[in-house]
Length: 261
Image 1 (cartoon, rainbow, N blue to C red):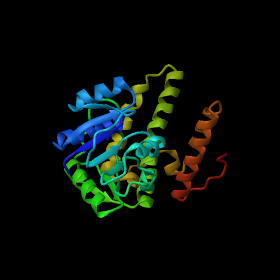
Image 2: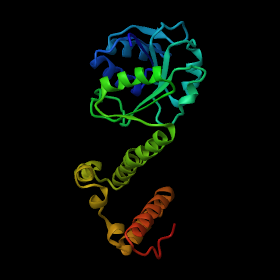
Image 3: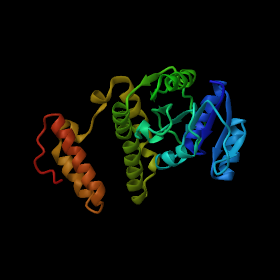
Image 4: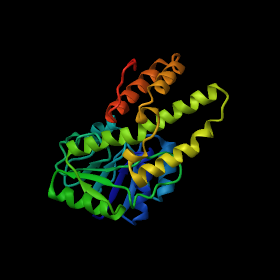
């Protein structure tokens, strides 16, 4: 692999591009639509910027690190040939890159936000390839970037993506909702931060089964019902609380009588 072209100017392109640069791999440019974002990322990655609506340079590997909905349209712009074309989406099939013969996927199993670049060296990378040629190229990139590389077919990668949403995205949204309720009562939202940090620490050290506490875990139906009363003005959140509490109660052998779903 003598050249890599990165397409995209968002969070995935930022973090993966930084990892490619850190690994001293041959990044020949970054391409995108938004001139301001494109130029900023190109400066950060110390490589040329290319407008997506113009002819793109040839590369051994083209990585489409954009929104899921734009992958197929961008892939269609890339001339068919010997180039390996890859995308970075966890839930999108590799065949979205057809008619390219050498297709690949490289997806970091990590939450990617704006801010300091994330060290991907210990982040699992899920990869898939459509041909031996694509496999050789994408594995070379993945192993240069991370020490944890998994070759997964779409079904397993899709399931892994689902579990990542359950484990990462939803807890963050629930934390946002919890802080919103505190603010409504003029309470400091950071009151929950020590709890949040210790919970994450316990999950990683003793596992979620042992780390789980709370009224539903111990079968305290009275507290669960009182919480549901407090959420009377929050219909969506109340339904979510009731459903999750019911699942926890059932999982630990407690009755769910009186929990209105």
